[in-house]
Image (cartoon, rainbow, N blue to C red; front, side, top):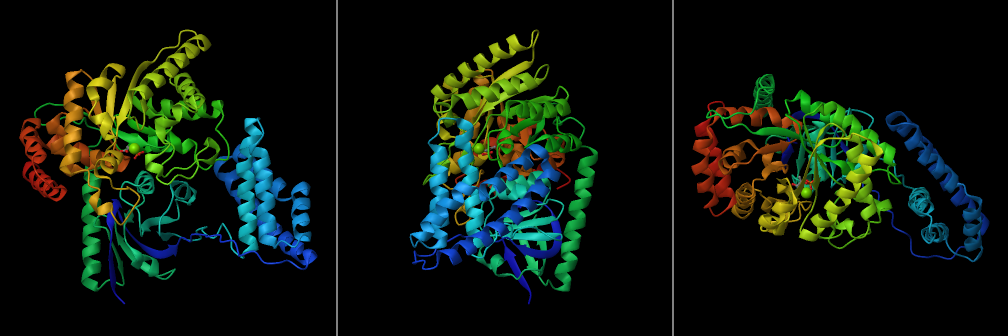
Length: 576
Ligand code: PEP
Ligand code: MG
């Protein structure tokens, strides 16, 4: 039967294909029950350990191919832990006491992990994460479930209630046709990752999307945010028409993407890319990026069991520096927390992770992580145009402390590499309203600002960017957000500091007249958005944008601003 499910566009594109339902594996412990036959119970646990070991072997082979020997070695350690004699003795002891197998296994795992956590050796301490990981995998097998139910076998449209960035990163991208997410918002990190991967994505599709059957063919129009099941003939025709006109526009934009982003009245801005690693950096240049305006370094830290070594960090940064070949490169220091969880960094479950121990806030407890990252960046950045940026800044002290650490790192790199130089700048993200309202105080401490509209929107409007139920309220076009953006640019310019924007708003073509009108210097976005934004910039005059920005700032809702800016864009350009 024909069905149309509407959501919010998160990454553009059109596709058709069978759906794959991503399963959330909930491991619910059974209520305690007495175990009268410990031998039988141990056999059950042994069988679960064997099944888990097969899964670990499979993961090891996949990671060996994708990421190399060093990463795969983690799974050797997992195999050893699952088969550890001392652990088995502990479990058998509890079974003898009459405790049920699931509880006996998990109690032993927790004791083992806590013992490791109490050690002073940081490396051994970090192993507790692996112990818990193995424990969960064996428990899943004991409960008749599997933690690797989500392996794609054919090209599919992935349907999920929600996906964490770490889950999205494990998906085989050559088989992912699109992401159709029931919850989530368009600026969730999964949506951003989908954009970077060039995979169409729709979020906020609601419960209906989860009711579709695995294998059912769906038509995904991610530009409009529609998923269609069994479309009528005229709808199929419209789908293909929309797809080919989008393809034509995209091809035309790509042809001119390498020309500078200069307005008709000669005002030039930088159009740069948001990246998560070296592959994205290459894609960005292929789409005409003038450089990188946001390198989200936290992706280096995700999906690992322990801290990346210093050499590993230097190696990754150096690869990106090499690809950029002297172009500007803004690297953001670790922004972990929020929806990006990394156990080995000591992140615990918090009631409000986006308001918690996130980004620069780790500096007071764990300054060595930041110092280490500064050192790695400076070492790799020798001779480059390196711009280091701090995330989630809300207090002056955070910047003062970070600058002290970066000075120490600078002394270190100069003593380590005689003659070391780089065109070095420091900046902060403006993504918390307090930072936007205190630009004049931050200005003496930095060389530049970059506005993160994804978080600035969530913090200004009090709308969780992950919560599909309220994501309709989270518009960066809301006049309150626009006022903070305008203030940031105006006051920063008064202090002779340049301002970029790396939130998703920078990649919206309808925002271009507003952003040019207030004088934004740098626009940073996913690679795919660059050609169209550059085209729009080349089609208009800054002088025409100034009154448009002033008018938009006086409107009273996001809907009014969107409608106004869209109609102004149409008026100013010919190709829309
Ligand atoms: C932002 O908040 O706008 C931003 C660019 O950072 P992130 O999306 O990584 O939180
Ligand atoms: Mg942010």
